[in-house]
Image (tube, rainbow, N blue to C red):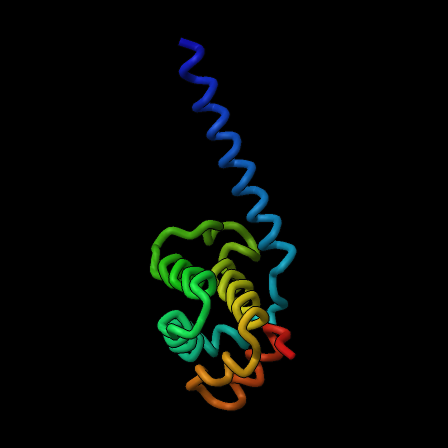
Length: 134
C-alpha cells in the first residue's frame, strides 16, 4: 500500500517545487509599478500584436508556439499565481507577456516587432523600451 503513495507524493512535491520556482522567477522579473501601468494601458495593442505575430508564417515555429501558449494562458481563467498573492498575483499576466515578448522580440529583432505593430508610435516606443529591444 505504501508503494502507491510514494510516487504520488513525489509527483506532488515536484509540482510544488516547480510552482515555487516559477513564483521566484516571476518575483525576480517583476516590472516596476510604472512599467506595469504602461503595459496595462497597451493591452489592446499588445493583444493585436500577439495575434499578428503568432499568425506570421515567416516566424520560426518556436516563437509562434510560445505566443500561442501565451494567448491560451491569458484566455484561461486559471492563473499560475493566484490574485490573492500580494504584488505578483495581479501582475503575473503582465510579467508573462513581457517575458515572452522580450524573448520573441530579441530572437526575431526589433524590426519584426515594428512591422507587426498596429498601435501608436508612442505605444511602440514604450514597448521597445520595456522589452529592452535595441
